[in-house]
Length: 208
Image (cartoon, rainbow, N blue to C red; front, side):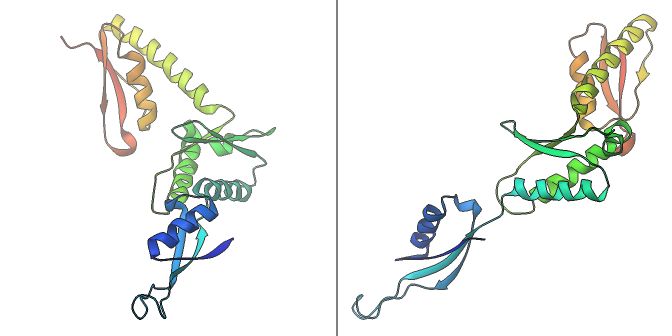
């Protein structure tokens, strides 16, 4: 870890110098005050500058990346982890020549848990929030397509039978996919019912 000792007329000035020297931003800087500024006799003789010792905080994305690599290794799954900046969030993608079912889990539950823990690790520090999305062999996109097809099939059944149909429990993101897919389909509407792990989407005839 690179540390620098910087001085200035004030603590704030010393901090700004440290930011420039380490080429970082204030939220990524950690420092301790080595010496408070002191005014000398007549403001000149015996005066002392402010002095701080500063270093960079670990990059939250790098910390989360290392955590996930170690976790996957402990699960004894031979997988390669890569990361990509998607703009508003960071995507971690797991790939392997082996089957990644153990990392994905039933309906992606294991993948969701790993993503949750990874985000906790990434955001342990105070400051800006970093959102990390975890994927494995393009599972997210395949699951999205599956849910869209399911929504369309069930919507057709509801319009035909005029009876409401309850889908299996889903997480918030998957429920949103169902709602979004059918929001412009005439003759049906969607509502979420249930609580906690039993929360699910109901597709029903449109209530006029």
